[in-house]
Image (cartoon, rainbow, N blue to C red):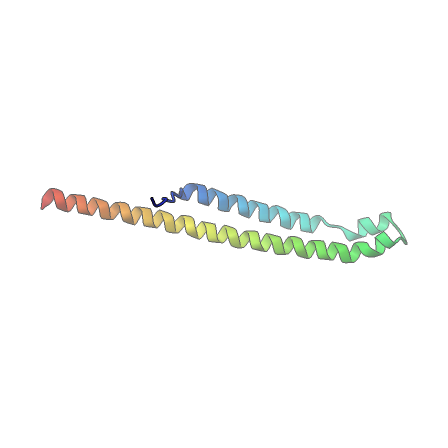
Length: 104
């Protein structure tokens, strides 16, 4: 027996919205990284010297992850719209067939 995949476009659209929110939060976190504060707390230490490059790597990683989450959100938004259109088209065609059967 073939399995049937049932997709609720509203749920997919809500997922996309949550994904966009997560990407926004990651970008805010990226902006909150303050290398100067870390380095100031550890003057002259190896940790202070490493803080700059590590913060840059962390910021780049957060940007990359946010970008990927945005791409997923866009794909899910498009999927939700496509599913909705397909469902509406299918329903319209069923109604047309039923109307033809009633009148013909």
